[in-house]
Length: 263
Length: 322
Image (cartoon, rainbow over all chains, first blue to last red; front, side, top):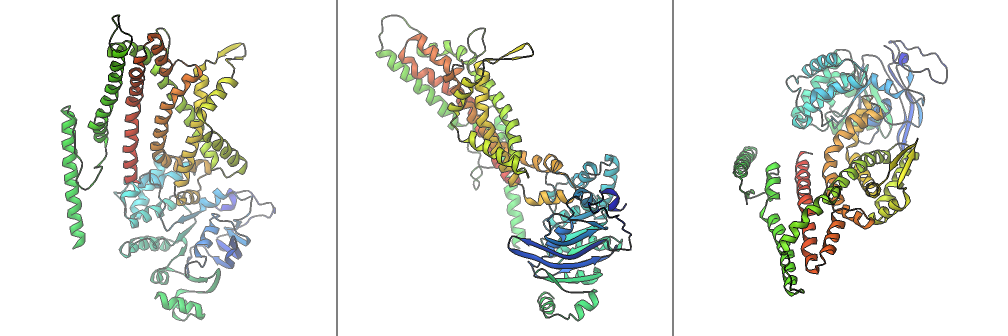
């Protein structure tokens, strides 16, 4: 179901028509400031359905802010962001309808500590989508098995390792059947051994055709699963391209400097 | 190498802890107060229900109770010796026992005494908690029009002397209200209850606000990204996590409140304090002053000390978990 069907037509009165061949996410000249600090200084890019986009760049370059703006967790100052043809920062937008379509996974997992793994996954479909409990539970169990955590249904987040918690968080987002998944440095807080298990989960998602936006420091992973790499620095996109050409012969001096430090 | 060593150490501590817990449980079951069950390296040991009972019946608490009571009685006896003698009078302990039922349960056919103190404390806490939690939530509202007044109300009642608030409610409120022909009486003790509920409300409001703000922002963000509405975020995610954090300070305020219920005697409610004074006056024996008020202190102590103790236990336990 297209997002446009769920939400009110914006005040412009323009008919909303979004077809899957159009970009599912589109950023046009997005600017965003935190007080006097301008963190995004004109960011534009499109994401097609089923694409896996990796955003890389030094810390403080506004990578995470881009994801937060797409999910309307942070307002933008200028420009436009559309998701499935719907302007995200339209004041009349039903933000909840948008968020049902856009899942987000955070660096610090942010699981609900007072609920078990299964309950964490079930909460949003039951209370937000108002789906029947039995159906949601069956789906939640399947999702847990999918992220290789069958048997951990009744564990509390505090009893799970970081990698396990992050996979529960991914399953929790997937339970809302989003069209797009945003991953905000999901492996940054994990130790090298557990990074792999999370990345495998994300790769499987990507292979299934989920549209993914990843902010990541895992260059190897970006190279492997990414369809397109964007390099940001100080609030602007410096360079972008498919991983093969991007990593092999970066044109910009800053990109090369960054890559030489990382790789 | 180090990791293996650590694991052994943890296992050892665990075993020792289990053994200590078993031992303390056995001793309690045998009805004997266990002492010095603490682990060598941990000052407080592993706090649990056993420790609570152990703490309450500890030598320290018992000694305190007995010594205060003994002091009171001795003072009484000493004064009795030097008081105007002549006629046969009941002893200090006998007099205390005679008056105890009155002080505990009020005049015959009337509800009062220490039981009234406890009833007032329950009601104040119930009213104060419900209003306080709502006020606390209002304090973190996204709307300035809600947040600012809630803040002002909280600060006003939190920084007002309880006794002054008590006088205000007693003097400002009518003794009865007529609604649709029904007359709802407003006895003094109800008014006093409302008077005490105001500062409790303000303090619980602060406790609630603090608890809400101590929840990591990630919880708000992740639930927001899962499309929970703000009401759902509060109800399903934030407040359930707050309950644990709020319980120790909440109990602390309950203990403080119970002690403060003796203030209602000043506005003419026949609580334990009022009745103690009446009893002393009725006897007309000045040597009974210290023993009688000593007994009253004991009543409050016996009621409040376990609560304070349990609060400590919960604080420690929740510190470990969260």
